[in-house]
Amino acid sequence: MTDPVPMPRKRSIVDLGPLENELVSEAKKQKHIPSLEEMGKVGAEAVNKQYEDVARQFENLGHETRNHVAKLEATIANCYKDLKKIEDAIAGVHDAGKRIELIIADAALFSQDVNDIVDAVIKKVRE
Image (cartoon, rainbow, N blue to C red):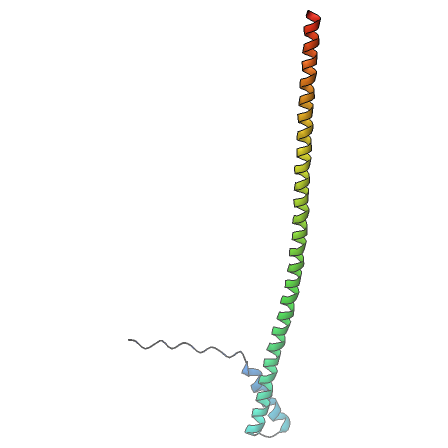
């Protein structure tokens, strides 16, 4: 059995560059070398600030996502309303088609009756 290949380490989402800059600028302001405790405090504050910024970004993404979902829900609701209108229109066309079919059937019967009367009259005239 071979040893597993080590996975490369992922970079932290925390950028330590600003932390280093902040520590250096803080040291220059105070004109003394900060103690380990002071550096830790400044470092912890910088890391906390970055995590808070990331958290705010996720919050904003959550709000945007909720807004997009609400818009999609409204669009879907409008689509269902439009589909209902289309279904109603189709039903109206079917009903109109049935009425027209009955009118044509009545006209055909009436036409047949007229033909029968005309044939009877012609037959009587020829007699």
